[in-house]
Length: 398
Image 1 (cartoon, rainbow, N blue to C red):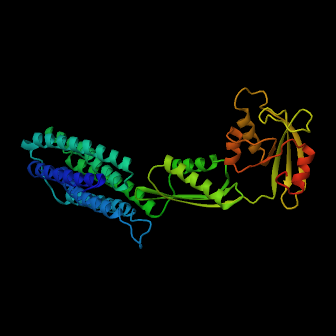
Image 2 (image 1 turned 180 degrees about the horizontal axis):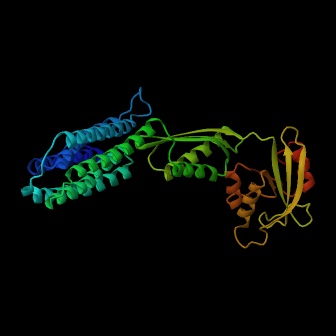
Image 3 (image 1 turned 180 degrees about the vertical axis):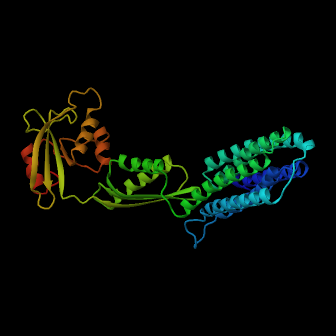
């Protein structure tokens, strides 16, 4: 069974064979040099369409020698198509300047009608193939669609030349030259696009920016050391080097898997994602304690605590580098203040929170868990007891 892309490749071969036949017959009877040139151009389309079909078929294969697949075969195909276009341009120029042909006025009407028919065929099929190429992300289908679409523009130029012939104006040779210019421009675009992918040029800015946003929106990510992406055929390969806020590799791996799933959900045609990660190694860590008005006893209501004690502790010897008391900016909020204050504490660089009771099943618990913030249940201890505990490197209370 042929896959969808392969069926479109077969359709392309058939359409181009039909166009060559029509243009060849019209050129023979009308004597138009522009039509002769266009028939030569369309004959290369048949070859390029067959090449597209072969490229799609080969690019799906994987083996031990090509563990990343043969996806770039499609880009090689696109490169070959561009060479066919350049060759067609050469043949057209040679025909125009070395083979004098006179228009046959008695067949001009039929030639113009035939050209209009070919314009309709190329317009409908090129739009269909381009749409399918964008949906499947196939560079060879997109290149072939752009190639075929130039036929419609060329046909419009040829039609102008034939129309001029009806009024005794010798526009046929000029039309043929314009055909060459348009064809070569299309070939150059296809050539550049294919060559960029073969040289592993970076993915487009929009895709890379989307991936960067996905990574940084994860609360467990501290920073991005490096981010790379490239195309291979219709597929994307993405690699990232990140620092994760985690104390162990198991937590870091879970964060990286979540990032990978988010990227696959939001970026189409991703074949491979490689994330290099390392747990964060901090010289200091931040401590937060919710306090009542007396700034000594722990507040039972985390989100509504009037004050928060914040301290920066040096990891090496647990020395207190700084400490302060801050008013709760969300204490008067009606809804969601627990989550808001949790996110606020994360912005302050908090790594450990002491609280009278746990956050099981509550918003702050999920926020702190995602950010790998340690929550220590301190019961009815007071601030002095807690300070003594973390200065002695005691993480729990007996």
